[in-house]
Length: 315
Image 1 (tube, rainbow, N blue to C red):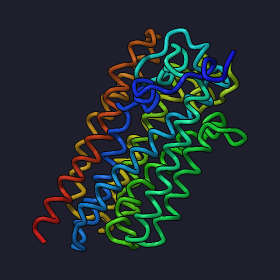
Image 2: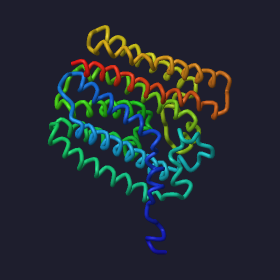
Image 3: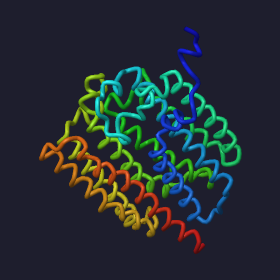
Image 4: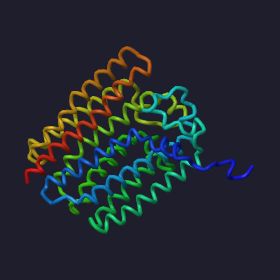
């Protein structure tokens, strides 16, 4: 059998599925938040840098998703899951349905990562060398999340990795405009990063039995349903309480109060999660809670973006 027959070219449809486009909106929201923070500082706004920043961040996220599908295919974690809660859990299923091969997913991940490196270097020439450090850290986290030997998500460190990655996305977007570090964006971005970590935490619950069989000791596997519900609730309260504390301490701007608009969504999701744990509902019953969790992160970032954008317009 020829190599071409064994590993056919990756189609656009397969590449689209491997990138998991529905989740990329969280990254777009993160970049928008970072850009709005920079604009609110009164340092001006460069639309070309902004467009390139969004593009590179989305490509980096797509690369991370392709890496995850590739390594989960090698470990068998996605293949043994008979009923993933698509599109939220179980990967893109592109490999499992024969739409793509593991080798094709790897090539896509490498190609997208290469584009991110090249584009990031060009952007750093305009924004400053600190952006290179952010970019390197982000790419390392994207690779280490699912790739051996680290496989951070299989060691219960996936949520920490995700929080750090999306915190860096916000800071990278800010730095791309401002070319400097400031405590205000570093602190203001933390609640959003915590809410993104909650997405991974609740998404891990439906996959936990199959992840355990494949040797993936995710946080959901380690904590169990009750522990996940408790951790989820704690993180949701920590994110919103931390934002309020930052505003009261005059670290975050007063406009950041708008970020609390996501609190009702997080609390509603937590309530549904606790009901799922208490009643032993089937896995599909988690769909509304997962949807609310994603919505909470998006609403949080977009509410802050709008509020900071209004601040910038008044300068």
